[in-house]
Length: 170
Image (cartoon, rainbow, N blue to C red; front, side, top):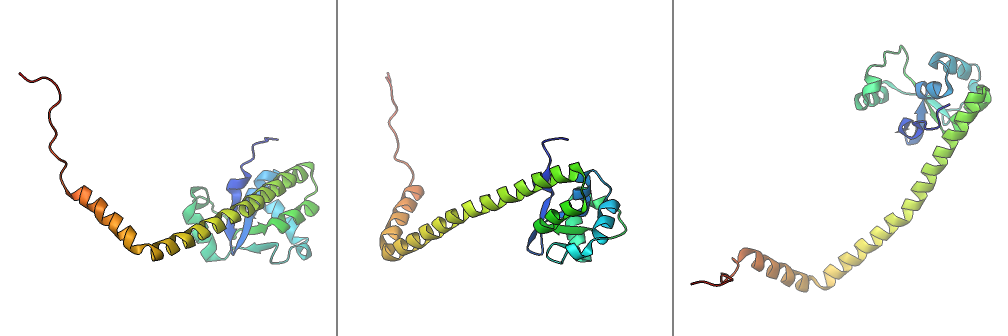
């Protein structure tokens, strides 16, 4: 199996969940979308709404308008979206060696995404803190900042002094 699976590009955010669509999962598991959905329907008790849901018409229309590959999708039914937990549950429904290996790779991608998001939280807090400090500085030093801006504007507006030619002139 190809080690460089395009898993991150197959993860979308819908209804506030990071999800993968049934057709993408079927492609990764090397089964037909219909086969995957039939296996899920035989085990619906394992897939509550926060594990899997069917896209509504507006969600499907929006997704199709954003991605060329979906615009050619002529399926009869709207796709199912599987959350991380739903994908985990798929491993108990699809028991092939391929499904197990792909599930492991998908779970690793979700973990990496979560770790990246957590690492970025500190950065956002630092940016907010810097913004507060800058606003405080501007409030306290408003006159000084204004003087600096006026001086800079003066330099921009005034023409440069004429320069003497350099070198020997007869």
